[in-house]
Length: 521
Image (tube, rainbow, N blue to C red; front, side, top):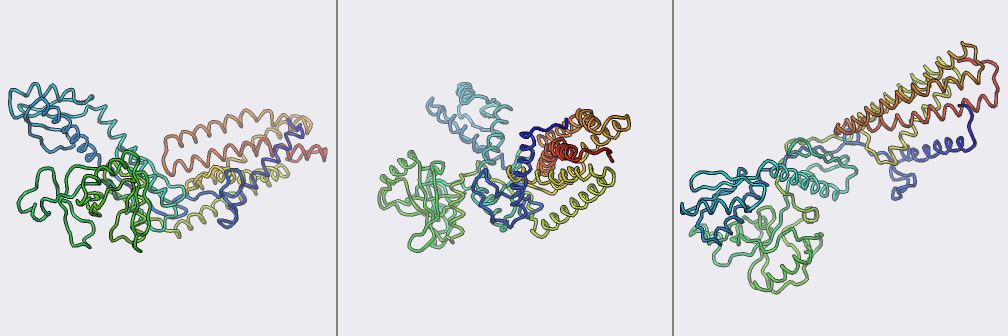
């Protein structure tokens, strides 16, 4: 156990040298070293929300809105088939509880039920008399909700990433909630504005038959609706527009802020299908207004003067530069499948985060000092070797977290402090076994060799069981629990290296060079 080949000794020293190299950027001012390369040292540990400051939000996805939209589409599909079969019907407003249709002639009810039953798989039929209610079964309902939450998570992640923040934490909580933590965000109000908007943009033709005021007075023409203007700078407060969507915002592939005539505007570009549709609509409707509707408001309604065939366009309005940037960000990231409500919002100031860092550093240093003193007093020279390995273990933890770009939180600091105590545990087991072997009359070399050999199985068992616990915490925990589990798992692995390899290398080198005749331990 004490014999080290030159290759093994070189590998141990190389690992230690790389650890120092990759941990060093954490002790230098931010930006001192380049961070573009994935394999060269330069990256620092990311600080979590509780250490760096930032914003925390708890969002709730309006799943009822998703269900209403799906049931509305389902009702339209059923009514289309009913019209083909010349079955007269009257729709009811779709709710989150199902799509309801009233059949006007009692003789058509059974045939209408058969059509509704086969309109879409995984649906169930209910209702009494002439009323037919179609609902999704439990499997389809769960799949629909899970898909909406997954899509919301992805859209939220894209929007937050566009803000340029580092290591945001975005995860699902419960059935329909999303937790967003953005460390280092200086403007939480902007995060609220970015995440609170659905950003569902569609294009509708402006109805030329009446104005919105005339329609309110005499009645809406069939297939139209009135929407408010987001910008009243042109004196128009409401628009009468066709209900039919001529081009969907789902066809947008890019959006960028730019300037036109010295004013901030937002440019957009469609995909091939959207561009062809946009060109066709503008070719056939010259002279009409094209309303750009975002989240139920008309943000712009320019007049179509000529066909727009390139699939590109601009959105004008009374935008500031920041508003143009945010609108283009929202359109690039995509629309949320449903509105989200902000249930909880917290901001952690950088000052509080700095206090947490300082308190964690103080606890770690104090624990380190006590452990170092105890090992030196209890085991003399061998205790000094264990302390050197302990310091190297902390350096390796910092290096691994820097390379992995793991996020350090306050519980993560607690994991590092715990690692300080656990890191010398293996050395204590070995040193106590060496003492026993010396009392039994073994020589120095045989006692050291037997001490390492006898304690090895106990060391492996203890560390593997703790590592399993850390993996379970990481798999089933969330947020701070994961941070604690990550630092604990990294600390266990690096402490195994420092205790079994580094300490043994130092002891073997000392025995080989000094050839001691007495062992004080």
